[in-house]
Length: 334
Length: 295
Image 1: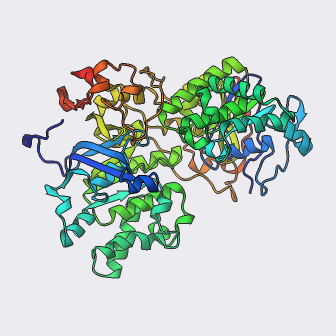
Image 2: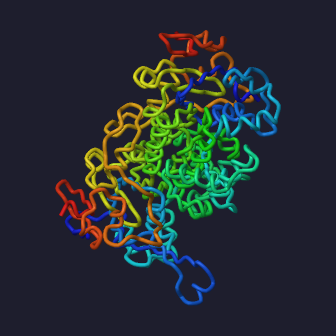
Image 3: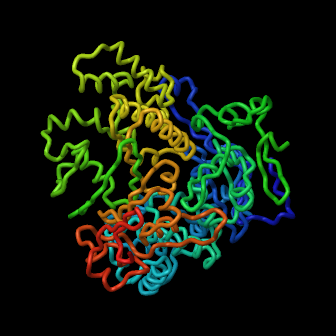
């Protein structure tokens, strides 16, 4: 277990032993008998992001990364553990404190189609959060703020994009609009959930660059959720690798992505196909991610791990702190 | 609007041709045209599609039906859409053989199906399962088994790994390499991901806005891309270890109103006067083909 010591400094966002479980009913009988199955989407995660820091949360589908992102924003109920924002347990927030938290934290989704209203002009959609949070007194001030934001995300000429509808924009432009909508209220913490996965190669590079620039410019704290390790590299300082509800490796991006320790991370890094260089060597991983309803005993990765030992089948490895402030949860490393 | 505009492309026997481009570039439309399964609002306005000397555009629907699946087959991105959710895997094989050979010996077909599943790496007992009982990777493997079942000469794969997790994608890439050795089929591999073609394709054709802009042997294309768009595509993939993040400015054109001259000129950093007026034609440059006024 990674213990967050006080001398480490407090993160703006902290997850402590966070667990999120979903009950899935598999049928009427099971429900009546109280035997509903449980999906352990997030199963004991510690994470700390300092103010202005950026963490790339990587993993395959079903790893729980989206659920963890939502948990940090207080959008899902925790089964255990706690989330702290700026030192306060977010589950205790009520009234105006909760509303302030909602303003200070924002989210961008994979598909801008679902987060934008097809019948509303881009300008009005970006303006909406300003009205909800009572920022900027009058209409003209709000309009000015929206135009500035559109310009900032590269939707220029801003006045023209202000009065366009989502269907008149390309995928990349829509994602820019969604980013503008999230950032217009001046949040401190942004969760970006696979914001480039639906985009073409050229739009993808543009959005990655935009996120990297805006993060510095606005001193944003960022959780960037992605299955694309190279994308995480290009925007984030630190990388957390998730597998079946647990973080298996964490550290600075150079360490995790250039010298991965966990066999799962090694495999993910080795299959990156970068047209500019030869594919790397890594362990061959068989099979697919098991259902989070049937989490394997011991190390969750052991059925697919080519290095699995006896202990891996019995004991769940805990994150071990290593030199350089990185940590890995694997029996190969003591 | 013209989605595919005057494309010339060859696939050799036992060759793997990669067809790469962004969404809307026309790569899927081109594949559907070859099989003559374009949606009803799509028509081939001109040109010829030659397969082993036969002009596919001039064949009757009945002749075409006998070619599809048997001599040319296709694997789609989403195996959900090509597998019937209410039929067991075994019934998919039975239906395929019946469609092409009429009455068939059920036991014999199931034996063949079992062998095919082993080849693509799916446990034989899955024959009796429904598609939803298989994992995403297994469903795609089944779709591949069905595509190669009748020993076609050409298999068109349209983004066959795009909906799968990266480690499963890596497993399928091994399968494709294995199949090319074992089955000696030609493949057209359509993708937006240049990287995955680097270890599979013999040649790569790059499409932009309905046109093929470059065709090159794979190694040469990566080592020394000729067309500015190909170079930009390669450069806009982030690289671990480098903080450079190059982007192509602008947006792909609206095909209802494509730019005059070279379709890439509004986004091209090397655009000259001639690029705005004259459409470049394919030229042979040292055994490679490129459509760009720089050459």
